[in-house]
Image (tube, rainbow, N blue to C red; front, side, top):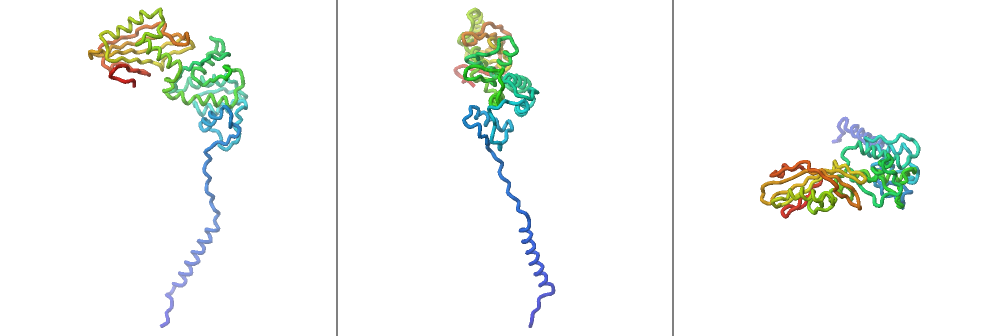
Length: 321
C-alpha cells in the first residue's frame, strides 16, 4: 500500500529547514563584538626611570589621578597652578590652594599644605625636627619662618642635600609630588611614636618621672618632692600618660600635660596626678624647666584614672601595652 506524507508534514519540515538556514545566515551577517581590552594597570612614564622622585611619583600616581597612558610625566618642569590645585583637591578636599595660574614657588606649596592640614580632621602632627637645621631657614619671628617651620615639623617640607630649603625657587612637578607623598602617613596615629619632637617630649616626661632625668637643675628639688609624694608607701606598678594630641610644641619651647599614676603595694588603690609641664629644647634634647600640679587623687580605682594618647605601664605584673 502506497504511503503518502500527512498533510502539512512536508511543508512543515521545509519551513523549519529554511528557518534554521536563516538563523545561521543572520549570525554571519551580524557585526562581531570585539572583546574589551583589560584596563591598563601600570604607568608608562618613560622620563622618570632613574629620577630621584620615581618612587613618590609611582606611589602617588593613582591618588593624584595621573594618566596610565601618558608616556611622559615631565618631573623637572615647573609646577603650574591648575595642576597643583587638582592634585591637592584630590588628596585634601577641604583645601583652598593658591589661585595663581603660572609656576608656583616652593613657599607657596608649603603655605598651601599648611592651610590644608589646618582644616583637615584626623591628622597627627609628628613635630619632626630637622638635623641639621636648614642653612636658609627664614629668621625667627617672621611669617616666612612659621610657614617653613610648620612644613618641617609636619614633615612635608624636605630640604636639599646641601641643607637648604630654597623656598623662593620655582617648584618642579617632582618636588610637588614628593611633598604630597608625605601627607597620607599623617593620618596614621602611629606617626606620633616616630622619631620626632612629639616622641622626644614623651620620653622626657617619662624619664623625669621614674629616673629624675631631663629636669632642669633649678626645679629638680621641687620636682623630686612632688614625684616622691606619689610613691609613698611603696608601689606595685606605675604608669605615665601624655596628652600629645593637645601639646603645644614650638621651635624650642613646648607645653604638655602628663598624668602620673602609682598603684599602691598594699592594694589600697591608685594615687594619680596631672602635671602641666613646660619644656625647653637645649643641648640637643628637651628639658622640663617648670611644672605645676593641676590635680591629685588618692585611693582611686583604675577605671577612674583618665587616659590620653600614649600610656606606659611599668611594674612586675603588667607589661607595656
